Amino acid sequence: MTIGRAQLEAIVEALTVVLPARQPADQVLKQFFRDHKSLGQKDRAIVADTVCAALRRRRLLEHLTPEGTPRQMALAAIVKAQGIGISQVEASLSADEKAWLSALKAEKVDALPFEIRVDLPDWVIEKLRKNHSDEEILAIGQSLQQPAPLDLRVNETKAPIEPVLDRLERDQIAARAMRYSPIGIRLRDKPALNQHVLFLEGVVEVQDEGSQILGMLLEARRGEMVVDFCAGAGGKTLQLGAAMGSSGRLYAFDVSEKRLANLGPRLKRSGLSNVFPQRISNENDAKVKRLRGKIDRVLVDAPCTGLGTLRRNPDLKWRQTAAGVVELNAKQTAILAAAGALVKPGGRLVYGTCSLLEEENEAVVTAFLAAHPEFRLIPCKDVLARKDIRIPGVEEYLRLLPNVHDTDGFFAAVMERAK
Ligand SMILES: C[S@@+](CC[C@H](N)C(=O)[O-])C[C@H]1O[C@@H](n2cnc3c(N)ncnc32)[C@H](O)[C@@H]1O
Image (cartoon, rainbow, N blue to C red; front, side, top):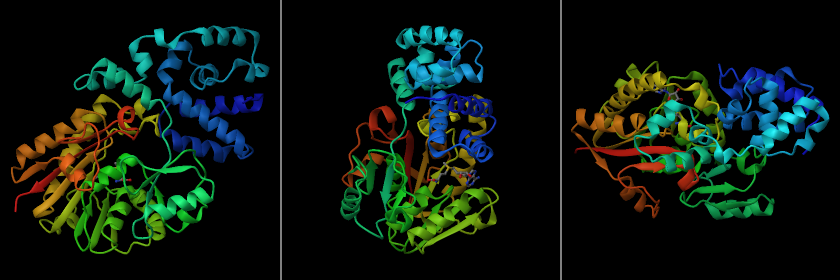
């Protein structure tokens, strides 16, 4: 793949606005493309791929480019992170740059310090060391440097999985049933699906396999009262609504108007009529309190560092901080307590995150259980076994890792309130 002068300039300009990491990279990039309407489809793909590669290997690239200018970062990303040959950019290089890139190309990444190979900030590595060996941390870090696959969930209210797989095959979209999720399909490539009839008619939705497994832990059933406390744009809400056969009542709470607004069109496509999105001001909103003790199942998909999703959002690792974890922790604890109060006797509470950090996961659950003896832990393994799902390493808690399960990183705990 040749990268021309104009394309390289566009990559450098894009990195100039993305690298300060003041806002999420996808938002900055979206604005960048709005401001650069002359860039064609192919140019945009090249810019987006290189920016993503630079964010995935930012620590390596900063190590290799002592001045760290956006141009150096762009060139190093192309040659070192994307593995593109120097000859493919040669026409745009000065003699000095050519010599520098040749030396860079020859440098052995495997011989670099551990932290650079892991490509995570020091504070994250330190926290991971509480539960993982350095060998595991390296495997986790390297798996998070890979792009994530495109995963779909089949809307059970519209179709079983087999005809959907058949339809994809007929349309020459390479796909296979997922390893763990019985309602999931993994695509081999990343086709633009948003004009495909299966997507437009709400038969499939994009959802990572790990997220599907987490949603299944709630075992939401027909006719029940269910709350998705942190519904966001509704990835799991739609799954729960379908599992409930579009019956009962499913409240989708979130503090973010914008995220709930993104649920709107997805909900319409899904055809579900049991979902009630509600914006709440915080976890103690009156809309929450009036449901105390009345709900069969409550899911808390808590706000977290998102470190398990770095394959999709590589900028997150440079936007989170140790101080941020402390703030998130306070939120997670408060949300879980408020959500737990909604569960009726004999009901279920699931706490989940897409974080890899013990502080956001086991520690929050352990503290909750200590303060709420009316709840007890149900092993995730047992819940999944009822659906014939067996996942290596899943026992008491759900712990999914990209290097082990080829899903985003997820954690979950299932709790039941005494009758
Ligand atoms: C991990 S995301 C949810 C993702 C979503 N469940 C999905 O599957 O697509 C966490 C969500 O928690 C929301 N949130 C933050 N503080 C909250 C609070 N106090 N009460 C309810 N939701 C909150 C955020 O706006 C964010 O949408």
